[in-house]
Image 1 (cartoon, one colour):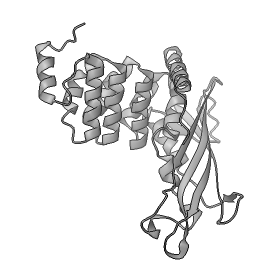
Image 2 (cartoon, rainbow, N blue to C red):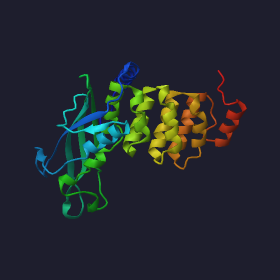
Image 3 (cartoon, one colour):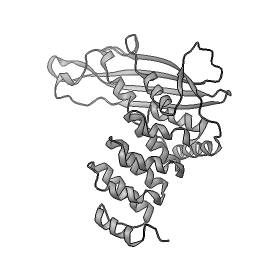
Length: 294
């Protein structure tokens, strides 16, 4: 997968932050969702990709989940609602296959690639666009033939769609650009696992202190370890001392990644370093009266 250059990522985050400060429009009551998707694959020994007719990913479900989370309803295409916003998603995908030196010398579809665009049009006609991509790479070697699929329609398309930083992230980004940071805060607490993780990460990218209470709630109560890890990391990037007590408690989290990012965030916010020692951090915080010097 191509890595986005740092300067481009910084520019994107700054543009999102600017949009968040400028976004005055309230979230809409209704959002119309339009999805266009197409997929293709290449047969063994062939060079050209051919369309796959039997693949349809739950793209609309991902968008609907975030729409419902922000408190809007999904509008039907023919309901005549002129005040509805519109989210249009285009997705193109490829099933990726290769020959493996296994039993029967099988050609298996073990990877998938997706590219797409999310376009949000507000009721006032303002348009916001974000692209997204996802890749499930093919393994070099398989231990059993059963780990792959002989038919391209069974390639790991859904797994690729649900990868962090993909479709859900792009939907959240256009919502922030159109309606501000506060519009997507409910999606951090009421969405599927992938959407919550992507929103938690995006809020850290933007660095807006208004997101701190919701990120703290996610860190303390979310039942998904990845979401808690992203919340811990984002709190450290925002750098708000309100998060310190919750980050200290997260040093006892059952997931190692959550503990590590909680420690990183504590060091980043406070300038102190007690590694991942919960008791040492607690003692220091108590001695300082819950305040950070300097």
